[in-house]
Image 1 (cartoon, rainbow, N blue to C red):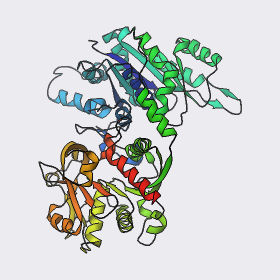
Image 2 (image 1 turned 90 degrees about the vertical axis):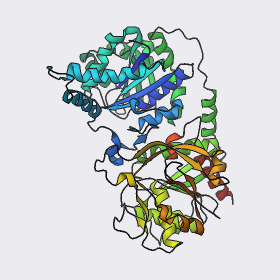
Image 3 (image 1 turned 45 degrees about the vertical axis):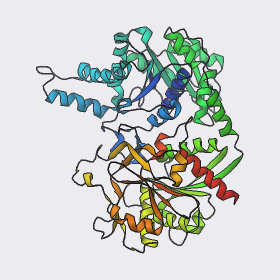
Image 4 (image 1 turned 180 degrees about the horizontal axis):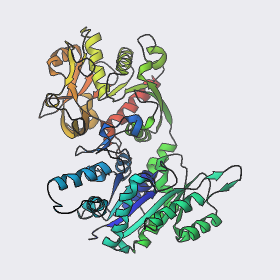
Length: 537
């Protein structure tokens, strides 16, 4: 069974402790020693995927090359490991039950009573082993969403218990991430929540091999001893995870705590190689020692929850480090922008990114933002709905087609410069039915984007239902808004850029989904460069 080693990361005490970052950091440390690693996330909610969830509810929905709508943690996995994930890397309770019920309806369990054990747990294990048995990976790290003790997580925890006996103890390891709170009044760190959390795991039949303890304070030796004693782990396997300045510090902190060494030793793998983290350290050095800074406005509908734009934020961090420049993001709710206050809100910025989104709310503010930056030569970057707003703004104010809009905003408009894609018109189901995943795009020779990418044929990831209406293409181009990226198979406009403007680019696709620490996305790199130029001028 075990063609790969299986590592499980569970969480206790509270959610949002950073299981995704710990998983990504461990993956990075193993990868830096020459191992092939993949990370998957099991989410305990009943949605088939997060595609229909409100960003306020769940943060960003991350899209993979193969068109899976997934949890935002997959973005961390890709940014840290610099390798793409797929449908197989994110599985929800909803998908597990959907698969089992489909099999039951097809008669696969004929005569059997379908139960959580073994049928649901077998389906969970099938998804765990799918990546491990592909032969591509030495390690499969599986992050179990939620907290130990949650009703929703119980089938996943039971499946993890069974995996140990399927693959053998030398191919199986559990890391439990927990919180050691500091009580200011008592001036001491408290281990009891962790003890209770481990006890819950033990009741489910799982003994954690390594404890990773999130804390605001250093863990003194006596606290480590106490945790080791009461949680039945070796003292060397009590790992301290202090709050870090940036998530990109965590692999270095885990290196100091010898997390990867503990994992390799538990799994009986002799590996004397020191991890090669030179590129990572170079990136961190640039990130922490910028020689300049720019202020960029992020105009969006969900700005109260920055996680809704997680990949965009991280792409600016990568591009900023590349330019040795700190990118200070100014979060601007598009609902607050009007024709009258554009100069007050946007006038002092070095660049403006108009973010993706769905629905009518806040769209007018995005259009006003585009108008202001277009007329005042401020570098502009529009992504998905941001690009569509730039097309609507241009049609209204340059082509003077005053009622032009998107059919998403006004289904009865006479001038739909943005329209529902032809193959979307008959769709009634909402889940997983958008234009999703990676599609090719051909760049126009001599265009700004052609020089930025340094090639003509690119592939980028999409998540949308509406598109540029090609009936208006000739008029737009004649007036100076050029379509410089086209899907070669469908003729869909993927990129627009404005002539005679320092930097005005809109993309129908989501470039932020492909930016990583070691490969910052060229569009973000050049946008930050343009903002720097604007600041200096």
